[in-house]
Length: 336
Ligand code: LMR
Image 1 (spheres, rainbow, N blue to C red):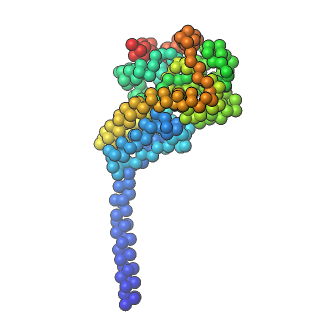
Image 2 (cartoon, rainbow, N blue to C red; image 1 turned 180 degrees about the vertical axis):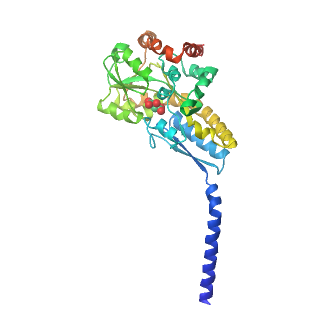
Image 3 (cartoon, rainbow, N blue to C red; image 1 turned 90 degrees about the vertical axis):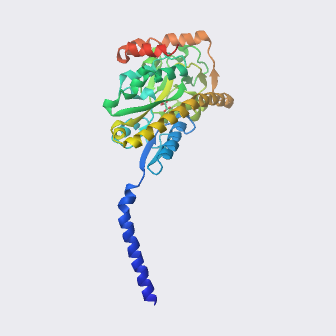
């Protein structure tokens, strides 16, 4: 009796294993497609929130078909590596700041020209214009396709010195910059020493005095605790730090049309969400920095701002032929 039962059990087991084996190819086919989205900032920032929103929407629109894995804070790739990783297919989506694309198209340097945009609303209008939209596809021949612009905000200037009111106060100081030739020229125009450096290394470089200062948005300064290792943050609003969400063009074009359509919709909604949050996050982080009382927020009078503008603006001429006068005109129009 016992033997019969165990025989039966054994047979049932064999049948079950065979059934699983038959089902396996189907099961493998039913695995969701994994989309890795890597970025370098914290989750409580405009980009961090945008990436999470995209995950939520994409998985809702394509249930069981896609799984979006978000890797914040340079966990997967720092900004020295993320573009290469995207082109190699190790990650499917990234959202580098616009300053980090200048190896792929010179035109995108428009966004780094100091004092070109009056405020983030002007940046928004330019990005939505035909000229701004054309930049999304300008790197396709290099394997990158832009899916949208995400805002962070306007940049402020911080240093480890007590005074940062006039351009002369920056003279001779070492500033960390993103990998951008325009930003390098901008700091050289001030008589300062720019140093290109990955975002993940900035806090330590400021803390140990490898550099004296940096430029960034309130949200990046706060979420990276830069204000804890800087003495003064001058409210210059001298430039913009925004993002382009990019995909590997070959991967994107190879997606099934219905999947690409749903992901496009998810991206458009996530873009609206991130851009709506960006201004408020920066405002509230500015307040948190003020409340923390570690770095002093230096407000600037109109003529101080005019002095910074005068010192930095010669940079435009240097890059005009690479960027194109027409694009600069289009950007200037967005200030009106
Ligand atoms: C920086 O390197 O300072 C920024 O581009 C980081 C980011 O992605 O906001």
